Structure formats: structure tokens, C-alpha cells
Image (cartoon, rainbow, N blue to C red; front, side, top):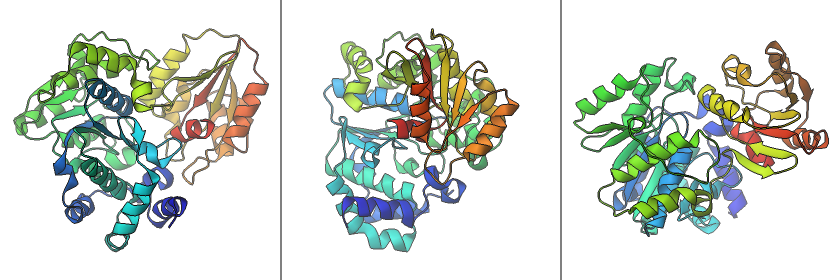
Length: 402
């Protein structure tokens, strides 16, 4: 198979959560453990840091990777979902996995993948671990896909575990309350492995404290520490992730990281890792901002950040997925804005007419468009130099603009 044929098979042969939703979610580690055995347990051949949470886990993972790169280490980075290219998910020192490796890996393991009926995410996790082992990384930063306890990435035994925060997202899988979701996220806390919790949240802190006691490990809340570092990732909300990443690095006692490595790492996250879509400025005059925030907690932060922008008129290109609780997010968007409603090109997208109608309930008014890029094009045509265009609501809306 060619590279594109390989990707098509991966995307279409088996359910993929980002595209299909609930049908792709498997509450079981059986498949990844079986695949690990076939691959000769690659996750045991490199050290790792495990990063979970509701918001900020992607940015935090990239920050940690950037710091360790500055310290001179060969650093693997596994994140999801990708914005433009599948290879973004698996990187070493910022360089994406080669398409050839993807093709050869799938060809070699295709019979097993079909027989065992691995999900898209399970086969991708196996691929990442095999790649990191093959390339002999010093350490890999592994971002949880969904939840934690039963996520495929939870087959690793890391040096440090990190949970950024807890919010009401993916409730159809993880539970309807913050406590239920925290329980799932706490599943990555392991025996005698230090754990960093990004934010001390009264509703859920006891869940983490009890889990840490149960497995006899040290627990630290990053929000209790003073960490004042500058970062090239824009948006005031990144300071929470900076604190979390800095504390995780300090608890990584088996690696030598100096203060200047931390400082340089935080200032060169985009350059070192290729992170995109976090309060990313696409152009000036008019200023165009895109952000992948898509749940209540994430959008609270980005909408607050948006209030700090100066403009004559605000234009918002907005699309969401169909399993999003609109009552939780639409009320967060500003009423004084021109809306350009759209539908990302995935099966899981919410129909644009439905979005436009629901938005009216929250006094958000605008036109609907047949595609994300049509909406973006119209926003640019209707904007003056002193205006601001914000693009968001879904990772997939941002991906199509980028």
C-alpha cells in the first residue's frame, strides 16, 4: 500500500474516536497489551512521562518535551489528535515520524490488527511505542488519549505522571460528574511514581489524594508552587501549564536539567516541537486568532483572553462536533460579534443549520456556510484592518483553516 492507502485503511477499516465518536471508544486494555506482546514490549525499552487531564495536556506535553530537548536528550512525543497530518502525532525532537515507517509498520502487523480488531487509537499507540523503541529515545512524553485508567497509553510505567486538571468533557464515556471523571483520570497514578496535579480543585482533590495514598506515591499540586517562566505559547492561560510542566521536570530526578534548559525550553516550544493551534496568530490587520479550545473549561479561558483584545468589530468562525453539550459552551461566546457558522468535514460534525438555530437561543447571530474555509473567507472579506477574527469551537475547524 502507498502511504495514503495506508492512512485510508487506518481511518476507515476501524472506528476512530475523533471522527466517529462513542462507537470507537473501548473501555479495555486487552488489545494494547496483546499488541505490546506482539511488538516485544516496546514501551519497556524507553523511559516516559505520562500526561493526562481535561485541558492543557497537549500544551503541557509539548512544554516538557521542549525543555528536555534543550537539555540535550532525544525526546519522543506522542499526542492526539493531529491537526493536519497523521505524522504530527508521533515525533522525536520535533521531527515527525516518516510516512515510510507508518506504511511498513501497518504492512508488517496488518493481519494481527485485523484479527484482533484494534481501534485506530490502539494501533497508533503501538506504532508510537515501537517507533520510540526503534529510534532509541532517551525519554518519551506520552499524552493520554481519553480518560486515563483504561486508555491505551496506560500500558506504560512512567518516571512521572501528570494530570493537568478536571473538567466536564467526554461525559458520555467518563462519567457525568467531576468526581467520576477524576476517578478515570486518576487511573494513570501508579505505585511509587510521583504524580503532579496541575490545579487544586476542591471538588476533586480528594480523589487524587486518596488514589496516591492507595498506591503509596508522592502527590504534588503545581498550583501550590510559584513558577514564573515566560513561554512562546500565547494566552495567559498557558501559565497554568507552565507551572505544571516545570514541576514535572523538577520531579524527574533521573535526568539532568538545568535552570537555563527550563527557561529556553519554555521560550522555544513551537520551534522545538511544532505545536500549533493554541492561541495562534495567523495574521495581523485584521488580526486572525485560532484556538483548539472546545469544552467549557477551555473556552472559559480563551473567551476571557479574547476580552483583552482591542478591535472595532469581532468576527467568529464557529463549528462544533455533534456530541458537544451546546448549553455548556454557546453561552460563553460574546453576543456582540458577527458569526460565521460552519461544519468541519468529519462524520461527527454538528450540522451547520442545527448549530445556527441553537446559537440563536444564546443570542449569537450570523450566517451559515457550506464549509469551514467558506466561512473563513467570508469573515476576511467582511473585516476591516482594526477588526479581530477568532476561529474555533472545535479542533477540526482549526485544522481545516491551518
